[in-house]
Image (cartoon, rainbow, N blue to C red):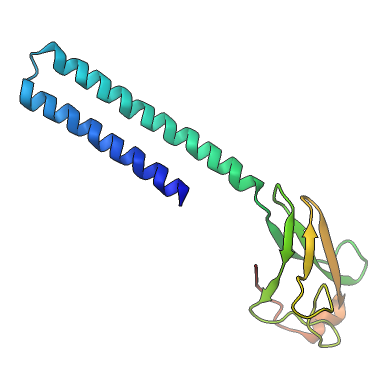
Length: 158
């Protein structure tokens, strides 16, 4: 919301600057030196708006990089012949109270839903530090692929 308000203020300031240029030219005419001072001042405001917009975008990118970013993946390389569900936090700060909501439940080789905890209504992962990961066993990779033909899964973190 804050980002939207800042951009709205810049747009309004730019519109007022353009209106000031047009009004100065229409009311006083292009022959007066005061008109060109108004035009120069309004163009300076427009230039500062453009540079502020770019600087704000860089700041927003840096702020977004600091947010937690838990990312799920299926890991078949770290343990020989075993498939693991691995959650890695690629963000810049710790991810806290991670709940995983599957669109289609991820089942292990015994047909049970894969979870990081056995507690009901508790977060799957209480805290995950930046660039750290946690994994849970899904099953033997050959058995899982033979048992479940459709291995397309997606989830939402809350």
